[in-house]
Image 1 (cartoon, rainbow, N blue to C red):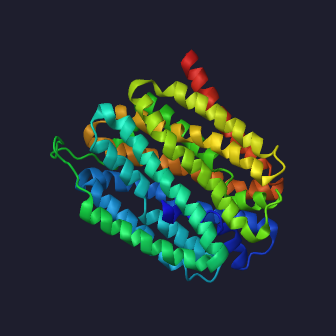
Image 2: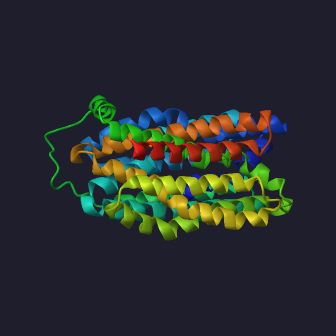
Length: 374
């Protein structure tokens, strides 16, 4: 997660460094670069999930981590935005670490503890999301952008070795005679109304949560942030969301083992929506720290809660496949956000993506409210 998130603070500026100097073109290309990993991963993630059910989740984690290592290492040597975009697409095709980790945890944890376990996993993801943006911004400000890619690739390679050596997969209790295919997983999901509803919520939530990332550094520039430390400030503002997630994800996870998911997601979506609208009201970047801290507390609830709900209704021998499809839904939401954000900002202004983000999260709360009434 450090590797995947460290590029967020400076990627829009890297686009400019690679020759895209027009502000409108930079916003559009920034959105495309952010969206790059999601174009193919939407297709490949369910495939990796089904293969994980067949060959083991550990193998899929190892494949994903070393795939990420290869992509990030090569990014340190790109000469134009086309090469960068191609490597981002490649990263999405061969990676999928989060989906593999979710499936591994779901398959190797007792059902009555799965919500807490997924909450702990969310904390580890958030820890990476804290260290990544902050470290990436700091290193890029003082040592240059390309050095970040090299350092991150080394760390990712080390992560792969750690998985190979220390992660043990428990296959006890699984029916190894039954193998599910992607088609069977898709049919199961399509025929289950509850799962379909959760997948829609995942798409909308992920689009809303990530919608503003491609233009966030540009927006911070308009709020009187010191230009010399813009990447570090951006990384810090991104990291505070992760810090709150580390603290609160296990708490939400324990609640998910005992309570229905709908109330948790409804309240959390409303708070995140309000925080998105608050971004366009503040007139100084320092005021964003408490806003984003509040959003982080409830951000820690949304996706882990939805994944926990899916885990409860997924067959043991199809958890990898179902989580793979859920991860594809996650990727669809992120792709929608990243590809449209730059165009929206170029057509209107830098405030409009925050408005759309707030509307998307509000729609999640309204859908759940309507579901509860019916």
